[in-house]
Image 1 (cartoon, helix red, strand yellow):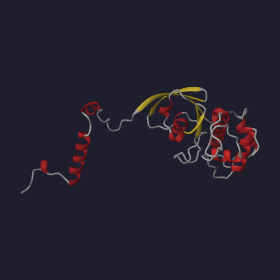
Image 2: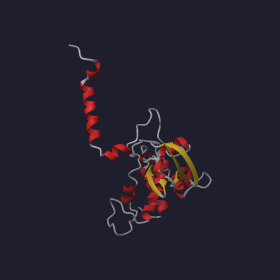
Image 3: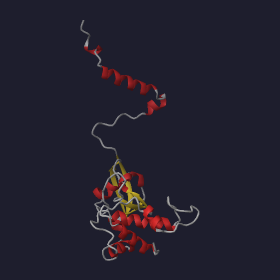
Image 4: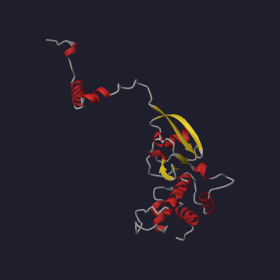
Length: 214
């Protein structure tokens, strides 16, 4: 005997219906009532965010999933900050947010409402280089130069951490201000990779700016 179409249910359909029913029954009544209806297909969730970048405030309407890196490069056209691995492993996208160095590919722009962001473009100018930029030029701390913006921003943030007494994994005493030894420098800059292998020159540049001998 042939069953009516409305009684014909595939195994896949039955499993989906069962899972949906179980999920719905696990929610309290208030939560189910507060659940918003699904977004219309094709719509993009956006938010208005204001960020101070290199001393200038920018107000943008962004897809809430937009990373800080893509905001800088694609919306503000500050392409000095590089997209390398896009997984927070190479450090090419390092910028300073409220004075602290972060991987801009791992954070969303909407998380930094009102924050002060400094990119490589905001550290110095061709006519008036930041001391770290000048030291990189002097010691040839780059070859292809792709990682250089992230290296410089990270080095600036790292020296500030040392001055504030922030320890690292190799600091011998967590209760005293760390000394920027060769081991400290290598550990603190280990999140910034240079495929050209200019590490020794980079270390010399940072050491000169720090005013210590390795």
